[in-house]
Image 1 (cartoon, rainbow, N blue to C red):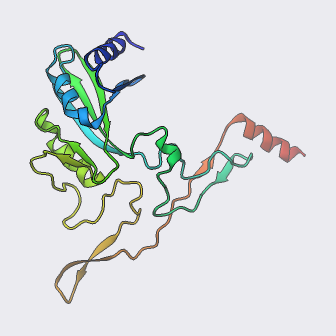
Image 2: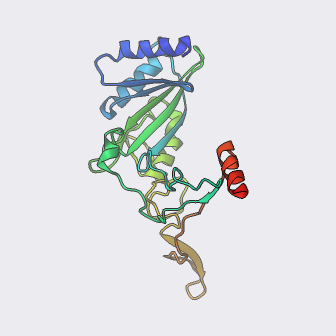
Image 3: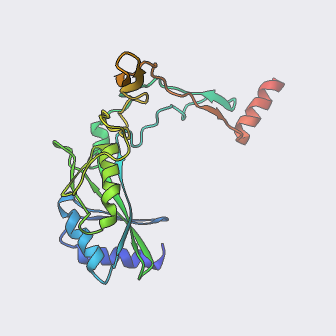
Length: 237
């Protein structure tokens, strides 16, 4: 790992020794996961302390870990011919939040922000998990980085994460009266409703979606030498 990653990780451990943070160094940078109750405290320190000086929050998004580590198609078991189609026949509700997954992931939903220090030319990924009990409430970062206003509205719209203290938390991408949060992995791929123009009412109306749910079937072609050798041996036998 680079020197700056080690120095940043050490500074994080030193400044937040009394907080249960988790720091991970990757090829893409440093990831710092903090408890939701320390979200604002850590964020404000990262902005104001000269050891960090993360004056810009360049992105914020939500994450749904519902299907984390669970493939939708059984691609591990395939034929040896180099060609296969795999499908598990899953539609809406195709993933479940299992106890096994809770052993590696704290909660299902998380908020992730990307921080940038112009002065130090450093980046940091900051993450916290939204509580699973009741509503998904995470403190808003608008008072620390004003530019996250629309990013938090987007995460609220697409994931249903509520940012406490946000000055104008409304949907920003979906239509008026939209039902559900489309980036949740248990949201139906075909949606819940569709719109059409009603000739009698002379306006656009909502109605239950009429198309059949389906899962796309991937086609896998493997050009690994093992499969080529197996195919050649079968032709010669």
